[in-house]
Image 1 (cartoon, rainbow, N blue to C red):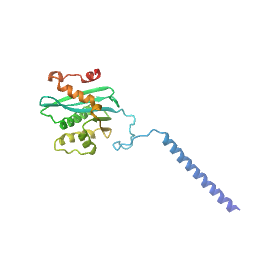
Image 2: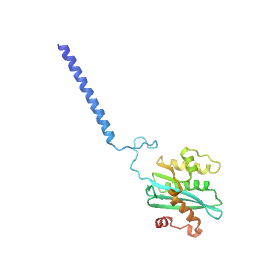
Image 3: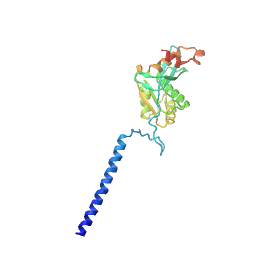
Image 4: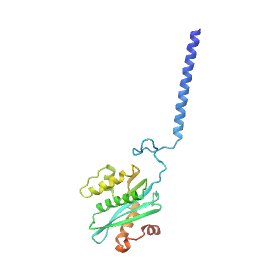
Length: 207
């Protein structure tokens, strides 16, 4: 009888221990299901959490050619984004490249110039959009070798690494890339004297 009581006490103790473990597991599961999801990025240093509330800047780029022997590489940086495009442009610029009329080259230069400016401004999270599908596909695939623009692509690769993974590249149609295209075209219509001090941001906001 004493042996039976001891076995029963032992079983009851084990059962209580199992119930406690089950309760702990259920509590942990419930807590996880109620917590906001945190994206995982391999670039985050060990011991730090990914800042899921980091503000993402929306940038767009484009290249354009005019009647002369030069082409333009342009970009626009916006504070936030929407389906319609830029919400609030905070920076825009274009560079005229003499002797370059190849759209492929101009678009690649535009991405590079955009990333350089974003790096200078120390922006931490970017969404880069454009209608240059070939170039964007190469960047997304990690293919930075190209007989024509390979050197520029490798510059882009180095610049992208500086953002530590918080940089998304996305192809959009021409209608979604309107601002950068307008800046590129506008720059080609300006004289060199006006070009150096033209306020693209105010001009875009007035459209």
